[in-house]
Image (cartoon, rainbow, N blue to C red; front, side):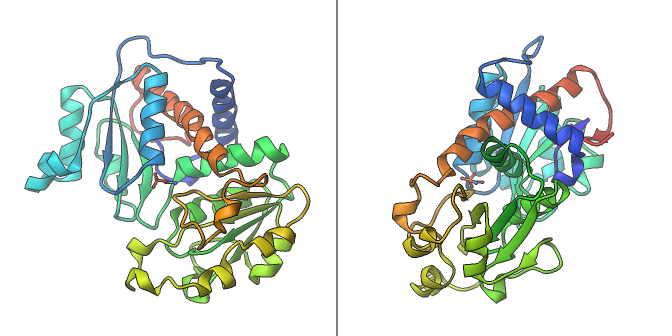
Length: 306
Ligand code: CP
């Protein structure tokens, strides 16, 4: 079946095909609808606005039936495991599940055991494959390709699943990935890229990608996020003036306005932050379609790479 768990599940051909499909959906060219009613469910064990709502929008646009699932009122509260939850939904007739979960690699064992495809909507500090795809779609719209592009990923690298997925894929696609942010949040073993000082990153980047400080994954209390962060590592109004001509600003959001990025820059001309969200719907349509096409064909266990 066609799980999508990490960006490593995608080879370059399949990744570019998803971006092409997403572009067709954006242009209103419907390339797949299920031949019969198909049922999906969204299991969010962590908070979400963009990912959850854009998956739901994508599901509606594809004509899929959504079986509502709320963790807080489900039998998860009685101790039901994730495996039993998925197989219960499968037994009822759900044909694919979208899962966000706080545990890194929650899917590791499950992927070989469950009977329906899983689309990973973010695992702890692990991976966020559909965010990566929508970011790549946004970058390709702007620059046409990835080869030789300088992409600076800045901020809370260690806790960011977006940074891990994007750095891996951008490097594979030939981009130069630069990393910057507080030393204590660097991650030399899990994120590929060259560490540079903040001001160098800003000046060489075609894409300045800022990351949210993931307070929920930090041990310190929220008040530790003080004004010095914005001055040291944030995209200030002064730093934006030193960005290259034609370069763009991205952020997976939600944004801590005035922390990672000056409030005034969130919707400035260079910003593609809301464009990223818009692209999320089309990318998720493409991913859902590929996953459910495999169900229609009655495929058995395999991941995206075959
Ligand atoms: N970018 C992102 O994953 O946002 P949400 O947490 O709101 O889904």
